[in-house]
Length: 298
Image (cartoon, rainbow, N blue to C red; front, side, top):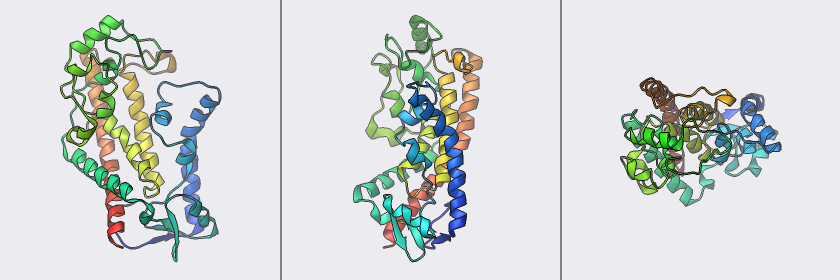
């Protein structure tokens, strides 16, 4: 695991890294295979397929094992990675090459490092109660998951939304609010102000740790990518359980945020996810720092 910058290259013998690769493939296949089977049948799961549709990492890309920056892979099999973007051959073995990235990708890493830092440094907010999903169906006949019923009438959904303060801090959730719901939010969020509002209590900010992890491929260790996906999966389940959709037919018991008990349950989940996200965010900060210092070293 990357914890701090070091100019030392870790070299892994072929048998060791092949074992790591096999373990990663076993872990990830448990997530990708059900999605691929559904896709082959043209079926769609309203909870799990989001992780393969909204997020852009394809299953085949997810299955690829990356050791992370400053790790060299020994043996003839490692040379297969030279056909992958971002790898180079060194005397120690085949390794991820930070200098393969163009200057605009370096600018992205600097932007991401700042976003991760400011998010980690803020206190978590735990009073949104998952109203973002409700705001996405507020006073509109259109819904994102039309095959699944809503738990309440549209008039009752509007009443529930209007009865509570809407406090979404995540732009990529806010942008899906209906036009009627956006003025109800405490903040009028913009893409450009993402770093001004992102905070560690937000379910979507913690889900996005998966996105930031894979956007740093091949410099992110695949263990971290898989850990971030596991967190995103658990968050997605809770997110949809707290939504206005009735998914009991899929085995998801609602988190009834329309009640005081449901809001308390949602906050407990939110705090738990925030605690799980914190070390992942720290590991991603270390990856960004590692990459930036690798560029500066040459």
